Length: 409
Image (cartoon, rainbow, N blue to C red; front, side, top):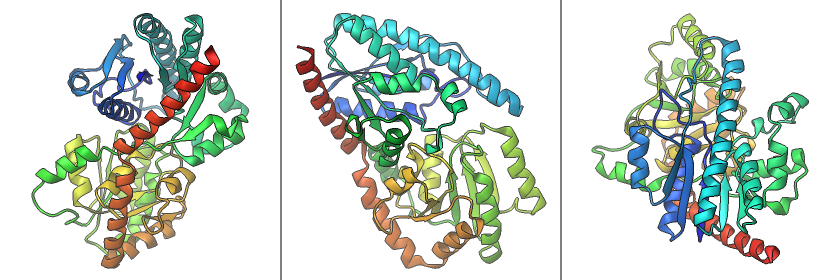
């Protein structure tokens, strides 16, 4: 089985270099597909030194295309929304064009069975190149954004104009959760048989290796950990408001945020609330941290708080489960899909400050509940490993490749 993945074309961009989010997912998936005997190619933008080292360790063969060194942070809200959109769209379109040339060269030298794409523009480019070459590869598309799973407005349809042809033209769509599948069916009128839900995986091998070298027991501190980019979508301000109630009862608790600061104005509103309510002793915003620092925080935290308002692939939630952390998270579809096992998490309305505070206090005061949730989290994480995820992808690839070859005759 020969597979090529067309990446996102936008991350990582300067000043970042480590694979994160979608890039990390693609790296882990292709690496584990290689372990299962697939010959995997990845078409992606050029990475920095850390990325190059990581790619050398992978079982996939990387084909790098040039990309402009675009900034990805602006202090002005207008600049954030306007220039970020223009710059990212220009880079995505450029990547789609350049990846089309790279894919065309690859198809000329290799008999590819499946082309797996991860952004809509690259999906369209892959379909066009595949047809022009009269190649029998099946084209698969994994949408990496679902616009909050909300009703699509005309404005969102205009901004994301390439989504409709990408979904229509590809041979199959992989939804990262059943909730995303339901949303794609209702909003784009897609045939449910054309969509297969497969979760993002968890890098259990990396986590187990970290834990095997860590000295001391896990979950020793009173850290309530919240991981994710600092943005209104991740809803950290609500978490701070909830923790202000928690520390009134449990002053030993400390809330720590980690993740890139993508909305400076939103961070300012968080810091303003912290200052006005004298919470600096109990709340810390660390920003971006290394993978080892993040794993240390997971292992030392008492629970994981995830009040996000919109999510497609809750990777950090799954990492928290792998560390056996009790979880308080939003009761939105994609999260409920992940923590489907009863008792593996407490789900609350992401805007309910009192409800979040009550759930956190309940876990802090009930050690037996924390222990049972930790055990369920560990078991659930095993079923979400990249070994399982890669095996499901491979089974789907084989079925799609066989169907494509039969229809191509």
